[in-house]
Length: 284
Image (cartoon, rainbow, N blue to C red; front, side, top):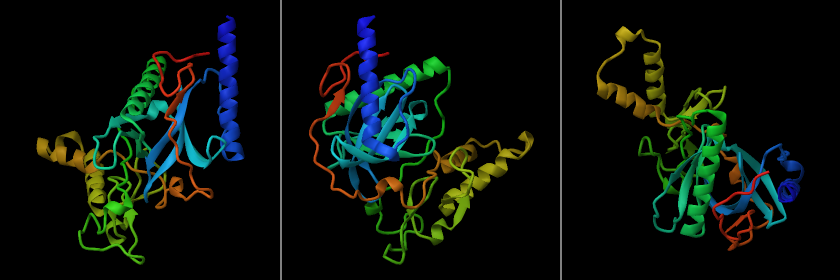
């Protein structure tokens, strides 16, 4: 009973410290039954370039923010319910190693750990938290997720028309359905993406046509629906995996007012193990 009380008090202090680090720019994080599992710095693949972000793993949410002063101050807080999260491991490619995708219905992005061990620890314990949450709630994981945006520097020309070169005047846009980098004319259409926003979002012409075909098919009587398996598959392929409800310039990609500090501490867990989760998570 004493250990349980001590753990509860220590957990409350840690959560309060996280709240204080975000200051008035963050939302309250203390809730009954919420546990801070661990924290660490991961490199997030942002629209313009990879950037260091501070991540906090709780037993029900994942929180991250921009680093203003290392270990002392963060801003632009993002809170992701773990019930909505799906993880996908990424293969090592060139300079991008030890990465995985964090996918949700409204936003999907890639993150990279400093080492393979750190990646394994993060993924294993996020997955465990998700599994426990879904088991407790009886809910099913979401079937659709937002597209991962292609970074700007990976597309010198429009990925749709293959002609328009991006310049100061011909700026890049992202399709909210497939995540491709496209020019203005190739992304002039908008569509309401289910679960993303009540307002129509920018999509490329290819996704727009596919979404409209999918919408028309959904309103057809069953007897009139085409029966060819290949046609059904093409519609599903065109529909993709969701869209990003954020604006053209992702707010998480804004430059920090203070330069980010280099990190080499890895993941800090709160079950008494430094730079590693261990096999148990302290609960209240």
